[in-house]
Length: 121
Image (tube, rainbow, N blue to C red):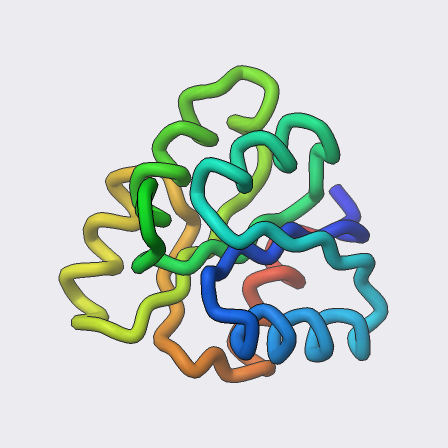
């Protein structure tokens, strides 16, 4: 599956911009969402090829959104990588349990994120 369109989900405008610029520079089309709830709506409407999901957001957390996406037959096939600024071991275990492919530490290292995307291609 070729990855062309990526959904970036983060409540921080700075982080959204950082990830969007990084991914657009690498040739991807980027759509964004500010909340977990918005990510569910956009994922179902846009059917991105890949999702980059923040953990800590107001309302629905990234873990909850990832679980909802993985349980929805329309979005279950979309790979999700969770990004967290907290304890890597704990967050990675939760991310995998919720259906994510992996958990990357924040700030996201460009080479690490691009390697995750390349693994899907």
